[in-house]
Image (tube, rainbow, N blue to C red; front, side):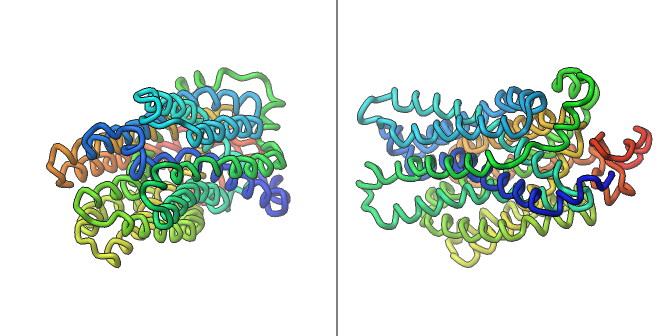
Length: 454
């Protein structure tokens, strides 16, 4: 790739772009992930109080899952808009849409006030929120990846991935503090609403930062070219292997994050282990993950996106059973160590590579759509039903983890299969050449050379 972008990429413009992408992603995923913690701790009691506690948890997780099923539609719509109108404008719209949905939940009436309508409204808001988040990650990644110098793209783009775990961390800490400081009656009455209402502050900050970032230079260059085919049609015609292989590759990361951060909290309660132990361990592990993500990103620049991805996927497979056994033991140190291993190494090792790997799979004119489709359909399949399916398997197995472990292992194996059919895309591992066309890049290698890389 040409080094034309290197001067701006190495200076203030790149730093501003990275900061805007990270803070905007924190704001948007704060709004989305707050449901995960609330589903595990509150919603079964506030919106589904008339059923068995375990069944209530299953129903609460169902509302959490609904958002994932709206994300692919959002990915298709916002991806198209992002490829046609620009990354920056699209990200402003998605942040507003998601933030308003979260704030609305903080004002919602409960089951005691309006009965079943409370759960119905919750589902509708969750659908709206999922639609907004569907366009977030693709645009945030592209703003940074398209501004970064090719030899350091993995490193810079990995910072954007800090937004998601940080967004989970903030409401988790808030819920932990509120639970510790408030009597249960007050927490269930009004305390749980505080993190949702605070989303207004997060969104305002995110919008302020995001409005100040420049539009992607790569997008501006593509806009000057001749009109191209519709992005989605182009993907399905010329890039089916990348689309479907990328979806499968997404499974491992999309499954292990809710496993560690959401499901194991409920698993602890089902085995009479204090859930606060697991929540505290998750907080420590996510802090460790935030530190590790740039290291994983830098590693992808050196040894390759695909190699790093595969190694971390195998690690997730190895850690699966020990994680359940650690929670069952109730040992604080053991639980914390397994959480750190699972999130800072297992999850981060598959999450960091995606920031540069997925954008590099697709051409500039269809890149927003390509990343959004891979990301959101992969997340819908692996994350969307995860807590519901895992909870159902837990009920069927009378609290045993065997079938849940088999379920997660199956998703990881599918990711490894998908990665087997994808190429290496890191320019440093391709003699400086890009896999897909990129304004200013060297001529894309012939498809025969790409096949040899697989």
